[in-house]
Length: 98
Image (cartoon, rainbow, N blue to C red; front, side):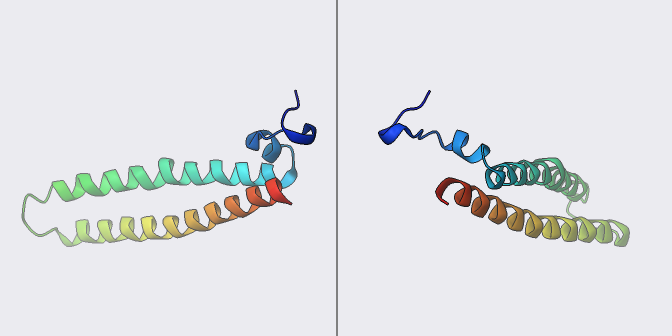
């Protein structure tokens, strides 16, 4: 059903998913959610679990190296996620307004 002025629909989701750009943006958003909630959050929880095991003392060199590796992984994935979300924003805006 078409509504709004001049018979155009104002349903943003409908408009965005009916174009290739909107579909790309939607897929990029889903990918960002998978990266964020599927990889970054569990890695942070593992880091917190390891850090809780120190009990006020310094970490062993092995644990410190493991924490540094996890921290680097989170930093890299956060940067990638930011780029993916920026791409999603641009493609969905292009699908909506161009």
